[in-house]
Length: 146
Image 1 (spheres, rainbow, N blue to C red):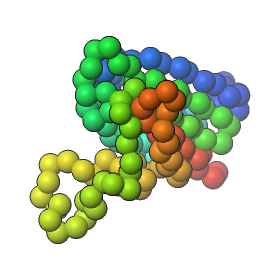
Image 2 (image 1 turned 180 degrees about the horizontal axis):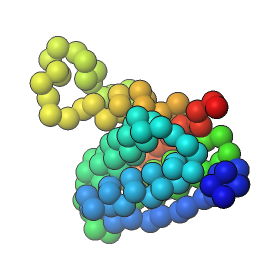
Image 3 (image 1 turned 180 degrees about the vertical axis):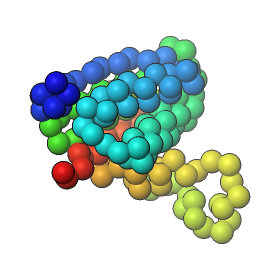
Image 4 (image 1 turned 90 degrees about the vertical axis):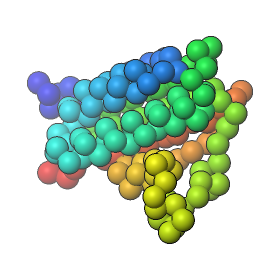
C-alpha cells in the first residue's frame, strides 16, 4: 500500500502562525510525507533539521513573531522526491548576505548556520522573493535509489 501511495503525487498546504510551535507542526507534517518515500533514518533526520531551520528563520527572522503574519508551507510528495516550500511574509532576505558560519570570527556564534545546513542536507535549495512581500525557500530531497 505504501508503494502505491508514494507513486502518486500528494500535496499538503499549511498556513501556520508565526510561533515556534509551528516549527514542530511543519517538521511533523513533512516527515509524515517523507516516510512514504523510504528515506533511511539519517535522511529523515536531515530533512527534519532542514525544515526546522527554515521554519525558525521564517518565524523569527522573516515574520519576527508577528501574530498578523503567517508562514506558508507546501509539501509535495512525488514518486521520486519530496519538495518543501516555506514562505514568510517578512521584509525579505538575501542568503548571500549571511556571514560565513565557518569563518573563525563566527565559529562561536549561537546562530547563523541554518542556511548552510539546509544546503548540505537537501539536494536542491533555492531562495527567492515572495510576492507581494517576504521570502520563499524551496527545498527538494530525492528518493534514494533502490
